Amino acid sequence: KAGVTQTPRYLIKTRGQQVTLSCSPISGHRSVSWYQQTPGQGLQFLFEYFSETQRNKGNFPGRFSGRQFSNSRSEMNVSTLELGDSALYLCASSLEPNYNEQFFGPGTRLTVL
Amino acid sequence: ILNVEQSPQSLHVQEGDSTNFTCSFPSSNFYALHWYRWETAKSPEALFVMTLNGDEKKKGRISATLNTKEGYSYLYIKGSQPEDSATYLCASITDSWGKLQFGAGTQVVVTP
Image: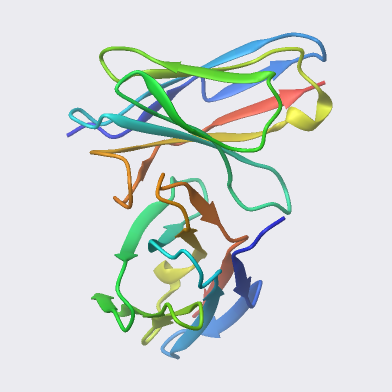
């Protein structure tokens, strides 16, 4: 069974631009969560999608948004990029939401210059 | 702000030695605790999902215990091997929506 895939793996953008990251969950998994990791911080929860609906959101500004498609693939978008958005963005999938172990993708390393 | 705290931040272990480290989390509104292992250049990998007070789980040489009343979990590595070198993350769920809140991790380095 293929694991969680994320594209692109690396991305360099400049301040003010926007970016879209993609995540394909494990086949059959319907819940997708997104996390941000910056140096010195733990994984910070961004949002979770299940059945194309955002069911949970972390404490991030509205510049961070996401969506989920009918095939459970998910995208997250960051608009008006700031230097502080430079981070590793991980997505994770699980069969169902609530308490199930999560399977993580390799991450997208975003650098904002 | 991390309500989930892990200690120590890092530790060095000699091959063959056993070690353990702690995850502290809010004891109120507890739903579940996750442990993940994150090796360099790889994705975090789930080790355990624990939900009941007194739970003990084991996977090979790694085991974990859970005390939900006092809000802590221990992870043990018995007879550490170099391949155990990784950052170990714990995450608690304290709301019914299942939102995971991660600690900053304990980095374990096992030297031969």
